[in-house]
Image (cartoon, rainbow over all chains, first blue to last red; front, side, top):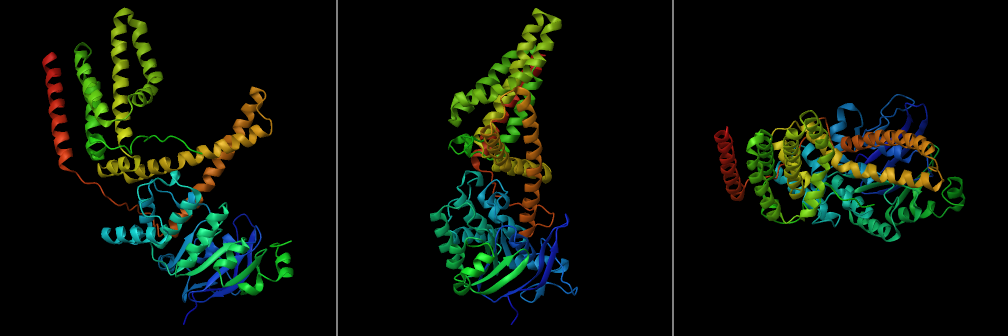
Length: 240
Length: 242
């Protein structure tokens, strides 16, 4: 059976000339939760943007570097890929751009061309999954950061993806907010890829980690092993 | 940071709040057109219209001070027009000027009542349903969503800047302000890029699809019918006065 995510020798250079990814490879099995950990500027966000084809990198031998459930990420498959991979951005103010919560959660399903009743049902289910029922008519600006993060996750759940990719989900959250978010993510039955440098959080949610440093994979393996390896963490600027 | 919204009080509940936004938009715009059309010598009609709007304002339960203070923002603009009307004509121009000023204020008052009784997102839906191009509706919608995000950003920059002791002399602060404007532009540009990525990530392909929940109710028909009868009466009066 095809792997949920397969990344082989992924390179990416930003138009400004900075080489953010220098040959990244890793695999994610179905229903696994994988933490992509690394210091600031390691290339975590850049990597996530490749999973649904917002950015498209290259590999040294010219083959397709990113595969989702056996489908190569390229221009022709974008629609399909974006249906499979739900990407949650770091700043909910970027993700929530509609005047009301309902419209924001409905945005994805509407783009999928679903019937109105189906859209309403999807929105209801997604808000229920993140515990935010009754927020439909609120304006995102009036919500707390923790609430915004939940809604941001709902906007992606409403598209019924198979893989959830989250960029720095705990950034700026208070301890209680982090704990609640960890509980929420554990309760969602998806293949998850979480980019973060919040090791405590990653340990709680993920069973596997990939340690990224300066655009390269430093190590990958079971979370409980790697996150205990002090020397490795120090080398990756994740501990002192 | 918290800000008051342009649609403050729109979450109250009243007859006016429950009207369909389309009813309010169409009636409001027709009423404004009427106000503009009223000839100077028939100024009494303005009084009648004012009375009608007072009644609507009262029914809406929005605090009157709020309606007044919001609608008075038109005054500086109206003043200019009035001023140039008064100057060349002297005393005679005074009444004409006053009527123009009052017309401007009354129009603003009507719009303020609409915006204070309708949540902005619903107003947008109404405009869209009434045929405003969806690109314009989208621009207004992004404006509504991001104005306050931007204001927050400016306030943070201002604090950072004040903390470093800038702004002691006006020309220094003026220069710093120019810098703030530049940074703000770049940040907005970058945010726009990220928002677009977030839209793409959820399957956006250039076509704007929205969800319509608006429904006309019996209330709209009744209110609309009564209002149009009144408007008809006013237009009748205007024709008669001429």
